[in-house]
Amino acid sequence: MKTYAIALIPGDGIGRDVTDAAWTVLEATAKQSGFALSGTTFPWSCAHYKETGAMMPADGIKMLERFDAILLGAVGWPAEVPDAVSLHGLLLPIRKGFTQYANVRPHRLLPGVNGPLKTTAFDILCIRENTEGEYSGAGGRVHQGTSAEIAVETSVFTRAGVERILRFAFEQACKRRKKLASVTKSNAQKYSMVFWDEVTRLVAADYPDVECTSYHVDALAARMVMAPESLDVVVASNLFGDILTDLGAAIQGGLGFAASANINPERKAPSMFEPVHGSAPDIAHLGTANPIAAIWSGAMMLEHLGETKAAARVMAALEATTSHGIGTVPGKERTEAITAAVLSRLS
Ligand code: NAD
Ligand code: IPM
Ligand code: MN
Image (cartoon, rainbow, N blue to C red; front, side, top):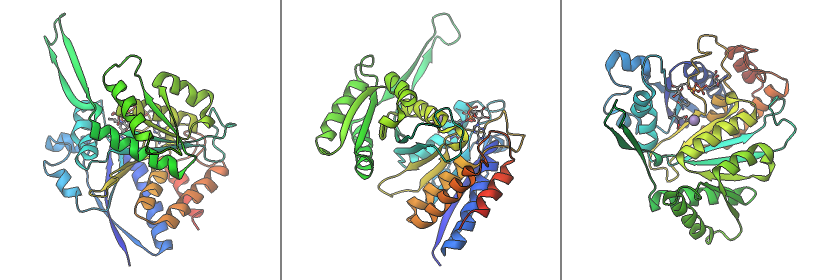
């Protein structure tokens, strides 16, 4: 039987609950579909940091190399470990280390979800650059703690990095409605974003069938709320993509519904699948985290592994669940109850 090796990194807070939920559903789907998933859990998290002084071992990336994919919950417990330490010690090095340069985040309404735009039919695929830009980590502070302090955070955009994410986005647009929105802020950021717009025009020449429009990120944010049905594929830099995809989650009905895939398109390293949301410390002790985003991310993992039918099974079970109103009202059901409802609808 075909067996996929999956690295599980539940992480912190609700990351643990939603990873458990996704794994339960994925294992059941695999069984029905005639393949197996072999999971290895890594306890890397803020608790691990407190025990060992590191979010993951120094050779953590090497340890993940052999896996077919990584399923992650959420990282961060800011009350005990500063976010800059936890995220730069685990999540961001995996994205960068495995050149998962395409962060794919679908935004559409599941049936029965009572989102703020529930009467609008939208289907947006956000493609977020995931390895450079505003997240380069380059910068510093001088005159720290004095009134003369200056902090600099340098965005780094390389031609290779911008071109590959744009090509990836154009390819996605070709498979969909052939519309691409490229997002910048080139009216204010005269180097990096003007550069991004230039590369967009160059790459667009190779995709004459795709209608490509450049938007400023502020205008695009408004459009996502006012006219989301006018958008198909949206491509943006790391930070703009981060912000726009929480907005995307909001129009889907909340962070509990937004899935994501960190893809290494060349398949030279494992890709990683995780919900858009974080560890949600405010509800972490309640047992009511919505597992739908994590389960949907798991479906994206199956799709990436080539198990298309199994992925469709998971999505159908999710839709059957939400169309009965289950998992659609934040905090109403327990995580396990939503998971059981999805499991019972797998067929
Ligand atoms: P968050 O996404 O954890 O929470 C934002 C809000 O959404 C909270 O009110 C939370 O209760 C709610 N929410 C999130 N997921 C939910 C779910 N599945 N079901 C129901 N409600 C849900 O964002 P935050 O509070 O800014 O961040 C908390 C921590 O998580 C921080 O340490 C942050 O850096 C980290 N974080 C990690 C990731 C990741 O690992 N990919 C993503 C975002 C934030
Ligand atoms: C996300 C998260 C991360 C990001 C944080 C936790 C570093 O917000 O995956 O959207 O900004 O990429
Ligand atoms: Mn985010």
